[in-house]
Image (tube, rainbow, N blue to C red; front, side, top):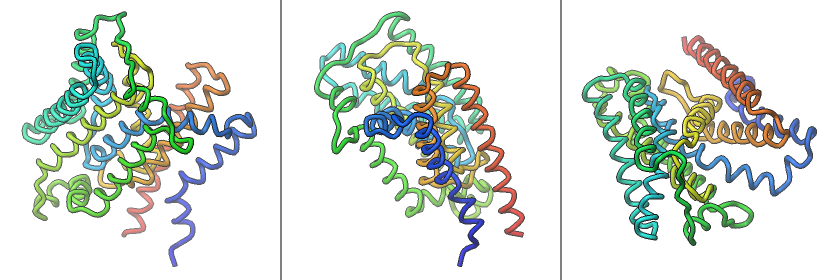
Length: 318
């Protein structure tokens, strides 16, 4: 029988999230209304896509800082193609191709040239931000109208937005890949020790390039969902806010920032945790400054708790 205290520690994010819901409900009963729960499911979709892509990168022992501003750039790419053609098909293809290309480029620089992922993706962050302003001059907007954007941004099924159902499907696919394929095992192996992974026959460079391509693709999907929800695109959108929330979600969900450990389920619960905090603070009319301070404190506490948990597991293992 597994040690009860250990099970509780591993599932702490679930209990904390449920307790948080209860606290916010007691403060504002409107928090647990069906309309508000549906709103949360819609709000967390871009963050969830960023978190999912970031999860694979972090488990592999790297980080991708370009995802947030990349999603803004890809949203603008979609908007430009929509403005030029009046349709979305070419725009979606362009987003997918560009996002995979960005991920591939990041991966090659990290894997083949041995450059630090932090520096490479930070450079891509600034490049994406600059390109967004070049494609659409600051202050201008492209409005997105039509059945596709209405379907993705506003249509529901059984009270759940289709965009959220898409996110659930991607998380389910990621769970299968991560837990039941050799590639998922290779990602974990690389995150634990690149040298040991190589000795075990893992193509480390291919894994690194692969996780950055997954990250890029998720960033592209996030751009599509973000633009569909807003109904317009413009430079200057807060892509870095999406990135930080995505990173916070996986850390709170138990992903080790040093790589080698994490669960898809934990990442999803971390996403819900971040979504609940964002929604509740807005619902309670908390000022944006204090909003960020509170989230920063939560992330720091989660990182500390997960670090202590990881250290305790190392002690147990020995």
